[in-house]
Length: 198
Image (cartoon, rainbow, N blue to C red):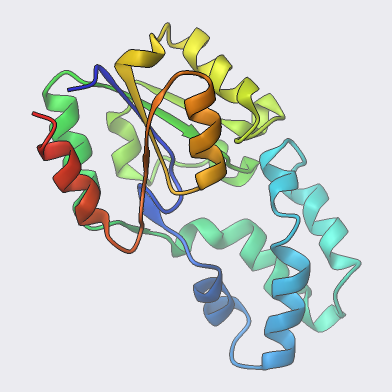
């Protein structure tokens, strides 16, 4: 068993879907959905890399007709209200914690989540929460992995990094971490993987 598990958050600990956000905050109009999809999501990573959500919203507003400003606002500022626990993963996190495994969160996140995540119960079991927003660089930038390793005094070979993005996984390997590419449509595969480590 690894001494430290380093988890991503979105689509590893919590489910997140752009289509679901469009369903909730835009509706069925195909034109409106495409306008929001093409103007809100492609540069979302700017927030993860240090642009405030307020600044990002102002940028997005300029690309959309006024009728869609509220939809864009809700997606940018209220997306966190539309996430869900991935089946079995929160229970697995609790089991790992009870076994004395060190738990680190390493997540690309905007300020809206970085400073407001108390309602995500599973995060209370983590020893350290590392978000990209305050650092102003994000996965797969190797600097964020090196920051986590130094801050948490980790030996990379004793750790496993779990993420659903192949580019992030490759970056984790480059800094010496063991890795697991997580499939959010089949969380039970990761649960089986962990159970077989023992």
